[in-house]
Image (cartoon, rainbow, N blue to C red; front, side, top):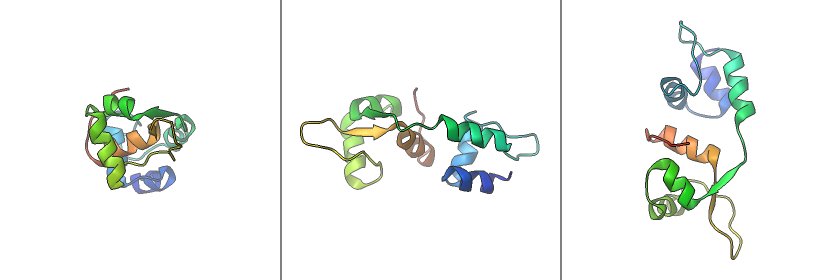
Length: 107
């Protein structure tokens, strides 16, 4: 499938797909197309697992204060916070944010 089709299936931009290929998150064919099996593999691997702001900061190589600022601005989406609980962010959201903003990411 084309990168545009892969982006549509994954719910990301074509730029994000290019970055995923560049960072070997998905593998492109020699002609630049994305095998359907790669898109399906990535969709299966997506998880609703979430981490704290501190862990998100470690993965993005920034401070937890910066993560909170991005959440407050609406640039980074967090899960609904209940009183007495920590701010939590889905791992898939961290990956999206990093790819969309040309940032490195730690696992």
